[in-house]
Each structure stands twice: as C-alpha cells, then as structure tokens.
Length: 172
Image 1 (spheres, rainbow, N blue to C red):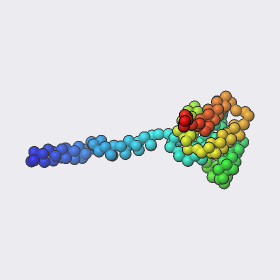
Image 2 (cartoon, rainbow, N blue to C red):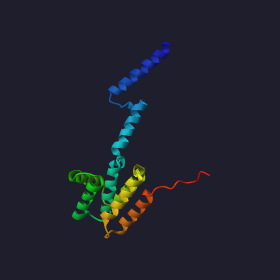
Image 3 (tube, helix red, strand yellow):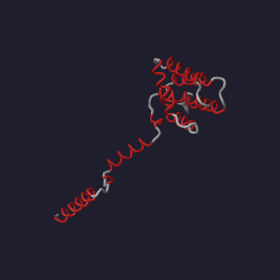
Image 4 (cartoon, rainbow, N blue to C red):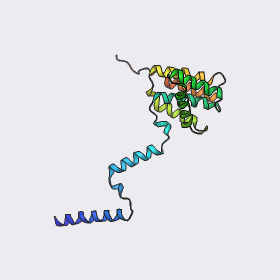
C-alpha cells in the first residue's frame, strides 16, 4: 500500500512540475480536450453554416443568388430590401440590416456557389413547405429575366432540393 501511495505522489509531483514549467498537460483531461476541440471547430468554421434561423438562411440564399451573376446593382438591392420587408414583415431598417448581414456572410465571389450549395444541403430541413415555396417565389423576382447560366442552374438545383420529399415505399 505504501508503494502505491508513493507512486501516486510521484505522478502528482511530476504533473505539477510540468505545469509549473509551462508544459501543457491539459490533454490528460478528456472533458477539457473535448470542450477545447468543440470550441476550435466552431471558431475556425465558416459562420454561414452555423445559422439556424430560416429567415436568415433565406436571406443568404436570396442575396447569394443575386451575387452569383455579378455585383448587385442598387435597383436589385432596393428590390431585395423591399422583398425582405414585405415577406418577413420587417421595417425598412431591419430589412436593410438583414441584407447587409447576408452580404457580409457571403465570401468571395469565387466561393459563393459552393457556400450556397452547402447552406442548402445543411439547412433545407429548417424550412416548412410554405417557407420553401415563399423562398422559391422570391428568388426569380430578384434575378429577373437577365439571369445568367450560373444563376439559372442554381435556381434549378434549389427547386429540386427544396421540393417536398415524396415518401418512399408503401404501407401495403
């Protein structure tokens, strides 16, 4: 028994000395390691994928689809802000803030299509059928008839992904 107590004391003394010397021994605690790992993954990740509100996801999809073509014109921006105000029942200031935050979260023009596809894949279950239908009505109004091939392809894939899923199989 005295050997076991001496061994435990030696290990505790060694760990204390290592910590005092500045050597990180936090890896010993699995709970602390898991908490640090979760925080690092959240901190280093793209904030666009951590949004959980369907209204903000819809705003990102609308603004991102408008930006797929080229820079958003002043007329398009006004149309988007008015659409946000009418559809989401927001005042003009809140609708403008929603537009600004969505435009800020979207990355460089080279990665917008990848981001939008990832957002749709991750968050399509957040939308009810009515919300998905409203979103699919908003996007063609924003891009208008002067849309390019990238926008049309994204809208087509969005319609396919947001369509209500038919149940597979039968009860019989």
